[in-house]
Figure (cartoon, rainbow, N blue to C red):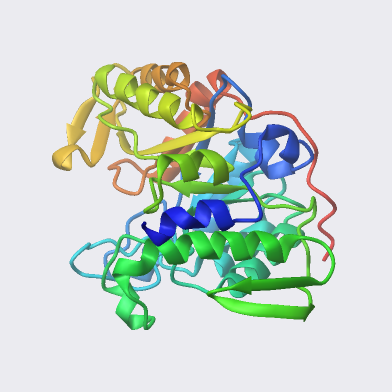
Length: 348
């Protein structure tokens, strides 16, 4: 039997349904059943060898916060692989989120996605709990097993073992967040007579698993606090319909059938023409559309069971500030962020 499958039986913690995060400011701002909110993926401009494209980005993230978007997302790309040709958001995600925590007040800070199979869970838990405290409880973690084979030998790890290591890291991470001194026995390490500090502000951090992360659908149903998947085709209703089938299949594996959120994302090139039709570019990697086409797509996603849409604009032609303003004024009112617990005081 695949060792990754065995982890489902050995795990001591499970994915949590919505009531477990009712006091979590970041989670409640993003997620509610049968509703959809909007977030913005960083970077706002693609890195192509010149760090100056990131100049002023944090100022725009402050605007994203002020406008009332639900979340801002940072990517985790430890090493630039020319084969992929995508350096992500360049900065270390945890360091950068700590910086953005000081530049924002309400927006959820999300990883999309932290590579759990590359790092030790103690380091992941320490960084995550720190950011959660610094931001007043605004951290939500998209997590993944990693899709860039070049990175694994650089860490001294086997790419083929990433699925098993991912499941083990999730288990260890969650145990570290529990209160009190823990005894943890894991293939990734043994811990006794010690505890991780700080703890999260509300006692837990939501973990949204990306794709399959080399796990079974049963594991995803039992263990994931939420699910983040690619959107299928976005040029017509057919993609959202296929996505709806995938979401239903996942939710059928949630043991108590309680609500857990689904997230998807798309890179868009928002046209100045509000009626520009939904048109795939770069082999379907980017969707060019006017705002009415985007609103139509978001509505289709919501009907499919998606609860949050993370929009990337780094490959768009128009200035980032223009796009953010148009989204805030014309789209966000139709998909507003949720009221909920305010972030805890951030007077660090």
